[in-house]
Amino acid sequence: MLSKKIESALNEQVALEHESSQHYLAMASWAAINGYQGVSNFLYLQSDEERMHMLKLFHYINDRGGHALVPSGVKTPTSFKDVNQVFELVLKHEVKVSTSINLLVDACLKEKDYSTHNFLQWYVAEQIEEENTAREILDKLKLIGNDKGGMYLFDRDLSARQPGDRDNKGK
Ligand code: FEO
Image 1: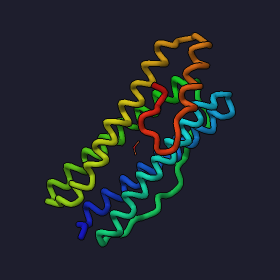
Image 2: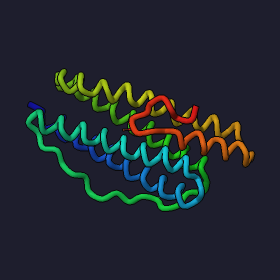
Image 3: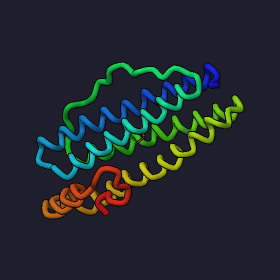
């Protein structure tokens, strides 16, 4: 059985994963209408992954006797300066998510909720991966600079990402 404190913290994490999903969906849409089909593909899939992260928490809360709550609407930006800005925002957001997961893990230890602590280890590992992916993409964009050919290839690489494909991130 979840304590009220942990239940509420998990529901806050549900809202944050939902926010991630909606933000990446807005970015995917912007990329699609600006000619970056690969970037768009990558972000649509990332948005789906974030929804999966949200649902995993959702089921866990209900399975442990809590009540998972549907987050309210998220206001997302509709336009971005360039692809660089998009991925800078992705990294910033992922760092925020990691901080939130770490606080949640800490709260579980304080409450002696070892089951939730164990459940959250998947998210701890996932955040390392997600921050790393965003950093690698930003490094690549730095190398590309204003090279239009490089940007074309970068976008083409990101179009190769498939659903559930954790190894194909445009490397
Ligand atoms: Fe589910 Fe990217 O944090």
